Length: 107
Ligand SMILES: [Zn+2]
Image 1 (cartoon, rainbow, N blue to C red):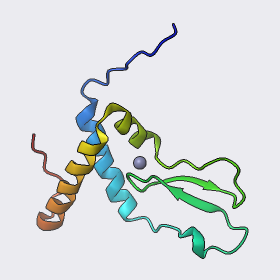
Image 2 (cartoon, rainbow, N blue to C red; image 1 turned 30 degrees about the horizontal axis):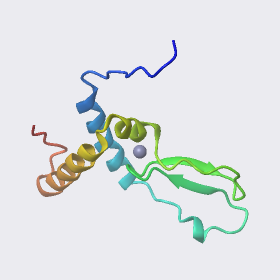
Image 3 (tube, rainbow, N blue to C red; image 1 turned 180 degrees about the vertical axis):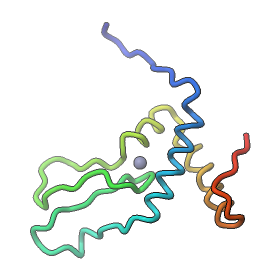
C-alpha cells in the first residue's frame, strides 16, 4: 500500500504530446493579463509556464505560491515527455504556419 507505484500510461505519450500542442495553440489565442498593469485590488492571473493556459486567478494579497504549471504539463514533465513535447510542438507550429496543415507527425 505504501511506496511509490509507477503508473504506466501506455499509449498515452503521443496523445499527451498532441494535447500539449493543442494547449499551446489555445493559449496563443488567449489574451494574457499583465498583472503589473492591473489596478490595486484586482485579482492576479497566472499561466502555465509550459503551455501558457491559465492556471489560477488569485486575490492580489494571495498567501501561497501560485501554480506555475498546469496538471497536464506537470504530468508530461513527470513522465519525462515535456522536452520532447516542446520540441515536437515547436515543429508542428512551424509546419502549420508554413503549410496550413494542423499537424504532421514523424517518428
Ligand atoms: Zn500547461
